[in-house]
Image 1: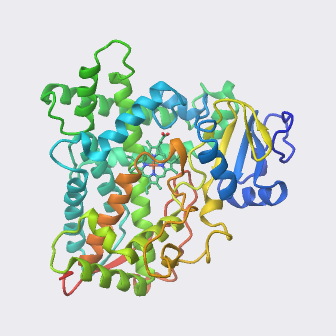
Image 2 (image 1 turned 120 degrees about the vertical axis):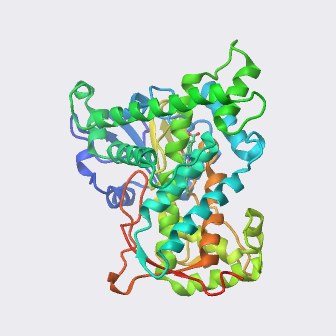
Image 3 (image 1 turned 90 degrees about the horizontal axis):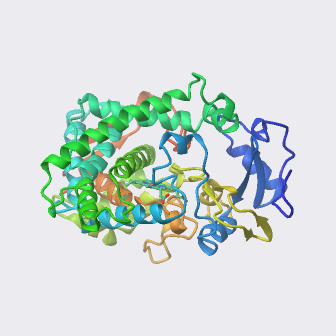
Length: 470
Ligand code: HEM
């Protein structure tokens, strides 16, 4: 039964609620249809659990920005909470522990605590490795997936642990594959079974794999923290682990919410959140650039003009590259990396667009509905960098650009992700042409649906640029 004045929605069936009415493979069309029937704020039952779905900028903004704290919680008691032993940051509920860890991670990643090597340097160092590998493949075509995932994982590893892995290192593929498999299961039907039927949770069903993967990843991360404890020089941090240990020393044990177990979970969360998101954004950008060579050429003209003979781009250069910035943002809009964001929950009874929403209600922010909203974007389904340019050709960011969401839970890695996308893509375009292989047939630009979306597998031809960006 829906509570009084709760948002309307389709009638649920016993036990399953409304889950059988949506395609597990891709519920997006079904969610659009429901919004057409019930409006911008409607409700569903995921098994026994009521959920409110927000469709379009107005509803999402009212919840995440206007009523920000009311909607800043996370649902509890779901598979992902149990996997992370209720100690992670991403699924951590709104409260002192989440706040302290979020503040710590944000400040550290804004470069205050990362010691001598800035985030920018770490990204550019990894980009050099990517260029070497692409250079070896110049004149050929390659599937860029493994290379780009490895690079993104290495960048976040460098920030978290001060270490990158060789592209052949089995540890790198172990980490990437474990996170990938966990994301797939956590967003698929087996997670829904786990969340809906508590009695089945102890059975050896495929969701157990998520717990096994996580245990292995945790063991690996604990070892890294142990090594840091032996090699660190207090007060001279090399990375996030050192910064956290320094902060624990500073605060002392009394009343401190920072503890080693939580450090491990924080590292796992940041590693997970920072790998597939950035890599799939870069892969989508390369796909669009290879299939729209006139836009690629316009980016290269701007890059060459701004950088001249300068060998390395810096993040500051973005202010002089409005067309490149517009192109990157447009590929991010189309990549639509987190199509339904990360689930929120209300932390107290509240109101939204006239409806009453009780405390603890699961809230789904349909970010896709905002990124493709026809009243917000001139040509929502096209690749059109002009969405991010004003009449004077300056870069502008429309309010509906919510790829990182908004409000107190806005993506914590936004700065790192924006730096990665800009520095990597500009460097690659400075040095290479990317072309759609002649024998590859027509490109399919539609993404593979998932909690984190990815482009369909593709190959791209790589050519060295004649002028090397000079
Ligand atoms: C292009 C790349 C990325 C995209 C599109 C993206 C998108 C998002 C989105 C939509 C959310 C959910 C916000 C909400 O709950 O409303 C989120 C949360 C989060 N992201 Fe990202 N993200 C990206 C990269 C990263 C990176 C590189 C990191 C790691 C450093 C990261 C760390 C996080 C964390 C920790 C949260 C949870 C924040 C919280 O609950 O307080 N993300 N991200």
